[in-house]
Image (cartoon, rainbow, N blue to C red; front, top):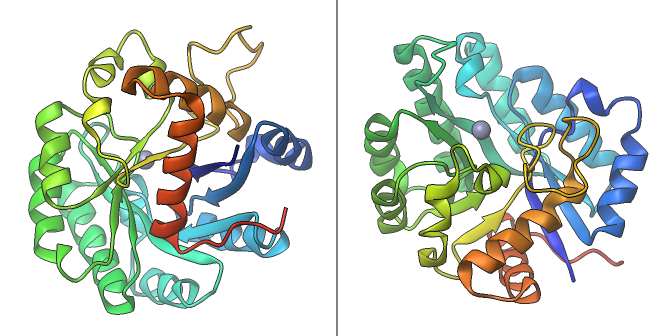
Length: 266
Ligand SMILES: [Zn+2]
């Protein structure tokens, strides 16, 4: 079985002390390849550096998360354009809108989002997108760019069934994380994840965040890591009425097509 974690924040400081062990555990839990999320200027450069040191296993995205939208200036735009030219960078993002926390003002978020969609459209690259409590504005801006983008994934989907179908109608991909396993706020997802068609569904940990609450035995820490992708895939498979092997196979095929990855030479 081969799994692909399409979103892991492996540049996070909590991975610095045991990075190789984290990768080794991922491998022994069938995680064949990992997209390292770039979510800030520095983070995107670090994500690329990690991908370069693990060719064929780790890849990177380059983007600025809406939380960091205030740092999006002309230099940042130029940096992302340089990073987007690197072979290991497979998508523009993480970008999008987050009105839940509003760490950056909404107008600033919208501007940074539009700039990054422009880079992706010009390069013909897929986008890795974040949306929280901002569905209407997010959908409107994405719609205006959609024809110019080869592919778009709404990562860590947590929204309603209506929002899901708005994205599927725009021919977006959907990323499912361990949010699904959260009995306090994720149970609504279990009712409709089976409606995401094969070929549009991918899986991710969003490590170190969102440790799946259904992992047993309960880890004695709260750090999530790519090895738990298999657990997420199991839970998702059950909700979809598929076997673990089926869900693993089609989400991996979808991720390879989405990001343009070749299977690793084992
Ligand atoms: Zn996100």
